[in-house]
Length: 134
Length: 136
Image 1 (cartoon, each protein chain N blue to C red):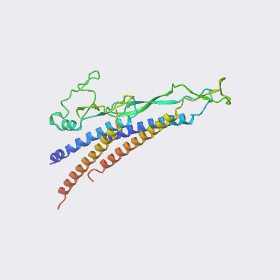
Image 2 (spheres, rainbow over the protein chains, first blue to last red):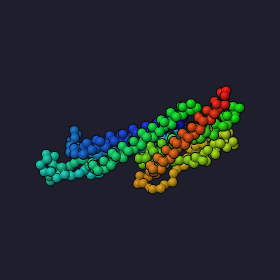
Image 3 (cartoon, each protein chain N blue to C red):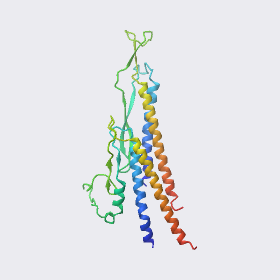
Image 4 (cartoon, rainbow over the protein chains, first blue to last red):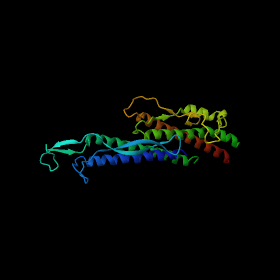
């Protein structure tokens, strides 16, 4: 029954999207973290998706292959009163772009929902198949 | 008698099997809507149906590989004897992904409904058969 592999495909997409949502959440949470336990400023993280074959030729799932650090430069904020300010009075802030992260968040949650719908459709198709001839 | 009944059901059996496989392909497209460089795929259902129902194509015509070093005869991926193709691009995207969510959702729902239609017809055929077997 190839309908069962729809569950694997949609499931892999759901877990990849929820991992993306996780990364977005930590970026947003740390948007204002000027320092961290290592003394370094937080760097925004992004997930990299790739297509992986699922137990058959025609089914393709998704997997997060790596989590990369955003290469964009940090945001410099002028705050001479801060203990973290440099000699010119600037504080190095994380390179998190809040607007981009919000867009990412909406995209991830919509994709997650669509895959839930896919799974429900496959489930009802299988249930109807079980009542064949009744 | 049973042979005739078998022929009667074969059409929808093939249809259900191909619909099931198409559903899997469409689900893969939807799952990979955000994967960079993923190309949306599909196959020609009518052609697959004709190929599967043609008596000459009952499986024996394909070359069999007896050794793992043999190359496969046809194209790499086929469903019901027809190749799995890439969908024509309507609107390009920066990351090289060609999944159009509207197209995929439409096709997915359409395919699911047609699957259910086939199921309903098969159920009807079985009911007819049972009615004929019962004394009136």
